[in-house]
Image (cartoon, rainbow over the protein chains, first blue to last red):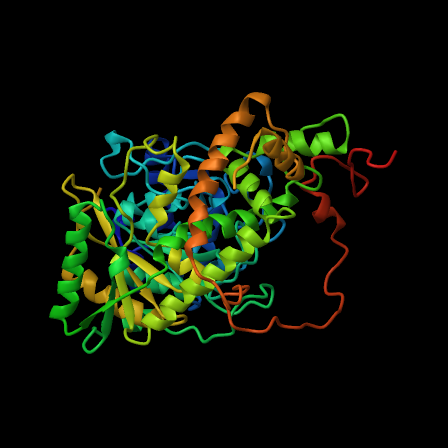
Length: 484
Length: 95
């Protein structure tokens, strides 16, 4: 039998539907490959061999009875931020210790409802705070591209992106607070979408910045992304910001074409010092869409440059509140002190890594008495301006095309000394989180060094359909077939 | 605005984590770097702009105030670092 792990999610589902192989055969192929490759990549922090095989056997039994879900028998990887009942969920932080939730996140429960198989938990930046997967308490993830160079897979969903690129799962769950799905997808030649805020329930996902966090899939191609997203989305009464919106068949929009669509190209995303190859990639994307009948519209998003500083007020502020719960009393690791406060302080100093501490300090400062108006309130007003930019732009265009990240994957360790340099990775992605809009990244070419580069498509709120039409067109034109 | 060592110690205290003496100056520099960078928001005119408090234009839903679970004491204390007889064991907080 050929290597089943190289199949796309769609091809694997079709293969099982035709009876070419079983879910157990497919699952075993992935487990064998993980056992062989994961020591080099460190993408999985936990591999659930027995559980995966049990789920696969149950799936094959359901199929024999004619019960076939939308993801029936498909082995997936789960970012360590999603609570998985009975399996360690640590957000890749020491402070959660060996925490094993007694409940399942809504998003993962929907995947299991549709027949998917869990292969294990995927590495990530601690509490999703990072852009290179270097803040994980479980060590760096290696990008499978040019593996000998030890490049970052991006972050925070580095394990998700690396495992999909290396064929260690058919697809992976991920989350995106400032670019954590799209930048890793761009760095690894994979496809990732952050849907509209409220599309995916946040219930059971470890909270980082609640007004920005959204879950989404990372997959091998656009069609897989649409299939997996459909299972992840849907209204959930347990998340007060969940949207009661119809979940369309996203995959049916991929071949709709872009004829007559207006595609916005924002001038503010042409940044000084951006590598020529990124500009060229963007030009290629524009030409491909033009050739298929789209109209290119020059647009302006004047507050773009304020997005990152706004994010670095809003996100740490919300994080400092969310992370107050890690006190070593009810769950997680505790370091005993002389009294209650001493125990809190020792527990949190030992449990949180440096980047998390840095962000908690910033967040605590901007929310503290006397500074709230100057920082947090001001940032929330600038955020309203950023949303207004998009609202104005979408009066004259249907979707926006930009690069995903300002560079290709860089070597691990290169940007660790300067937090702001690291934060700039998210310059093109963070705006959509602040505005709550959907954004997708797909691979569209290689850098001069042979590394994948991504293009980003941003859509109107709840208009993932148009994003998938544009993505399908670019995917067909780019014909990106390179593998790590 | 910028912070000094005293500020950093105070913020760390508020955030409830111990900060090693030798790390205080490092954090002062890092925080000031970030705070200087976010100062650029001062350029933005936000006169008359309402602060964005929600990205989703919807009212928070109401639900019935009713008991819908319970009798899960064992599950609740299962991940506790210290527990006994279904209770959390915590350091003494009242003298």
